[in-house]
Length: 425
Image: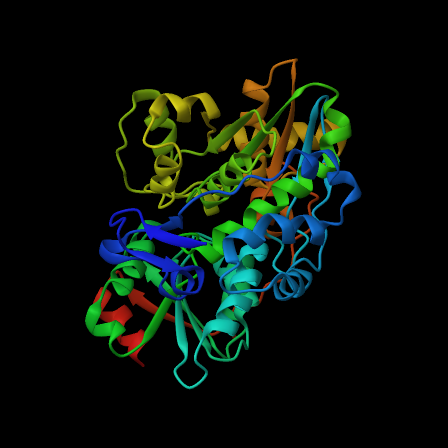
């Protein structure tokens, strides 16, 4: 499988090169030249397959120039060392728990897979510097996934005061080859710095750079696998109903991965793109016009993205056909007040605790779900990571002890020069 740059379609690279480079010319994102379709028998027999068998068959066509099937299976066995269970919630709805990995967030899947790819691809004598921006969970997952991976150094940018103490601890407590950098700005500022670095010819002449954000194909593609795992678990509950999946959405890598799974044949009838107050994509669906705007801080901080990078991948997938996008994706936006109310309601009704992002997704699903449909919301992070939010409506929720006094981080202004100096250090 080859990959092309959305901005320069004549720039065609292998999976290995797309992974190592992160971005193409003019900050263009790479996408597969085509999306393979899986045979009908794959879905008919999916409940008889192991998760590793499912993952290997679904992902192999995208990486077959870099991995044998046996190599890929071994990598996936190292990635999926935790479960992704589906649990029933209210009538006709369920939750896919993606927070049972080491950093308690869905991004553990992509980060662990990409770390193993770069460990295989990198020149040990000329280490790769992985640059990443985070609004919360990406940094934690990348730090853990790449910790002490030979031949790779990681520099994580996060916005000052806009991640939870638990998230900050996960990013800053490791040291070794992990460098966390606090930026006086927003996630969008951090993401802009990363993209500038990846396009800086003078910097790339001195450092081998790659990115671990969902702009990297090795980050977002493996995330489609747990959609297949979810279908394996909900298939018997559908009973002829259409399957709707709600995705808490920030940079839209997770939703894009789901759309790829659907394009491969996975029978999802609709996606719900659940936004918080950062509603750029929601407004696009309403008006047909895309207008990036500064991100604003919310209780679901990992979704605080005003200019989602993967929007262009969604446009490319649907050939810029707005009607086709609207047919497949329903947009909803949920306020902080609604988020808190939803956490309290679900807890009081069935005793289940949603984290703020999953609460956004679940309420968005409830707003659009029809009696003829069965809905699953992706629960993207553990409520333990957001105890300060949860305690606003569930005062008895325990507070984990987080000691940031001995953590490793640098602090910079929103300055590319300051960032570049760290990358060259």
